[in-house]
Image 1 (cartoon, rainbow, N blue to C red):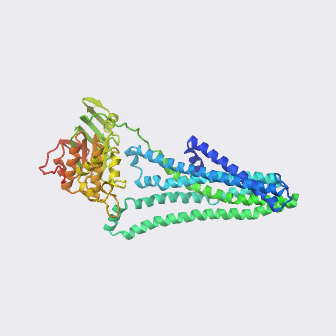
Image 2: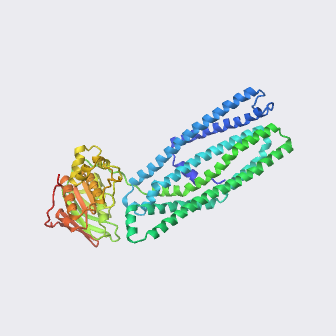
Image 3: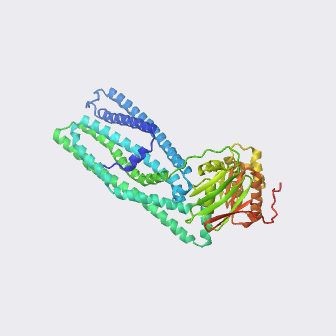
Length: 560
């Protein structure tokens, strides 16, 4: 019988302490198998007094006492092993999800370019659940194997003639393990792929819905989603059918094979009837474990593609964590910087970054603005980098450390916390209540929050308190103020605001962060009124120039 690769793969995910715990689980299961077999055998002299089996007495009272003790021991051992197994599954699930999430947090941004967001969402959710089910199946397989070995050992002890049944049972197990095994593996692979497709249809549903409705393509969307759903349903149905078919083969084989062995044993050696009854009880007890063995193998096969996806994600290169810089922000001159993508790259020369100043980055869509600010934020490595800090040459690793206390807000970023308070405290857990209100006032969100019944405990996505896209962007900028970064990157972070509100919010953020360099990516030329430096990306060049402020009245404070 081929051991599914997932068995070995799942074992490699366990640390040493968990392998010891798994061994203890196996010992408890073996103990339960022994006491269960003893209890089954002791039932015979209770039903047929006077028939003494190898470890039974002719005294009914003694047999009854031992039967009761073995039954209690069996129940306690099985209960304890189940509790231990449940704890192992829970720890495995927490560790599995925690490891992949922690790994993804350290993956450089360029390494994620080849991985879809739907695939990552699958890895962090459903895919992990499939692996947890596979681990649970591995536990049950261990119990089934141990119980089968112990049960057969007891049967051999009672009647060595039963050795004749061993080849039959082994052939039956091997045959059922291979019934449609290749098909089941293929069905499992398609199931994982289709589940990723379902995440694509579910991702950022409100935005997707607006797009679909505007094109009048609701019917096509229903059909596309329905196709994926039907494939998932068909895959699930086929998995259950394959399990049911193999169970049918196993049960029919047992129904024919076990009586045949009894007939042969009785006619060949005239085995005692009580021994045959005991063997019948043991084999009857064994049958459900044989069926669960087949189901466990199928679940392990289902875990194989999920394990492959998990490993592929964990194989993404990571970067060492950069310690948070505690040094005061200084002027830095970037003499030369080259980034890719785009294909031809973008080259920047002599950019002076001073605390308290705002740098505006403009250019056509897709020209490389995000790649440029990713490097400035230390999120992605450049093709070339030459910089100075107080006249001393600075490597990119040193630049990353310099801007490690940063804040990066993009257009698509949305808070995942429940309330306004939770969003703000996530940025600065030590912030006082007054600091939270000041940050909200700076971005013009204080009136909305103060008017709410819950105040700072206003729910972001509540039925009667849902914040708009512009309000959510203001809230994210309040996080930036509370963060007090060395470098703040705002990549289209005010796109949902009207022009006047955008200018007021950016003015407030700039005034609140006198020690930060603020890099703003925007298509609105009016932002130049606030900028000290403009970086205009044209072709493969990022041209640096002093800003020419547009005469615009910009309010510096919001009304009380």
